[in-house]
Length: 343
Image (cartoon, rainbow, N blue to C red):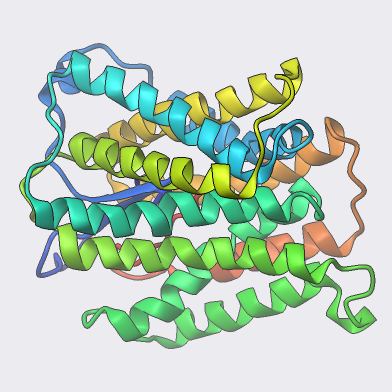
């Protein structure tokens, strides 16, 4: 569930772009590329494939954790707990690496917008959406983020040029969405409000990624510093809104509480650090492939763990969406246009 970038989330190069592209971290943050962290580079690491698999599992299970969290807390409370836990993890990482928060009012202003688009808004929309739709459908809607990103980048990023293959991918992805939603049945049994919120959350990520690329690339601050500041601001934003729309919970049920803490600490905090390391080690193009495992894991988790019902068109449509998303990213170099989907 970038995603910081992230995140949100949020990505073989032949011709490098004119400016450093934004790295979208599906965990909920997006920041411009930064040089590899010398501290992390000097420390022993697990093989990147193991970390890649762990990241896929963490983000794939995020939709299940959101669903469990909303069984005990209001959606804004789930988002607040998620951001608090994620910010705490990044604060510890920054303290260990002796990183400072970014400086300058302009940078903090842009981070506030990024925090809203990449954290506060999509996290809340997914939490509200899962009140009425299965976690499986939410995970598949999240997979449309690369499609939104490709469409938006054609307009917002000057170096992005449409190709027949990418346009075909956009059309194929759209057909996949219609298949998932059962368009030939008149969208029978579909909860429109919940589905619309999940799709809007997925749209919010590439908008945020493009904004970050245009405003924060070359800011001089490290990825970890910008991501930490972004999550902190997202936490503040939700903390101001939550008391207005919710009341103090009467208790702290164990399972929903653990789900929210795990969602934030693992899916929003720890996962961002893992993704940052992957991008630095194997590059954004390989790291972004985690996007295509998230809906598969989310669907499997929803069916096996939560017992959610699954009709044939859901997995078939999801595969079509992923094929379309893959085609939209098939080009010589990554543009940072928001190709990673963030839970």
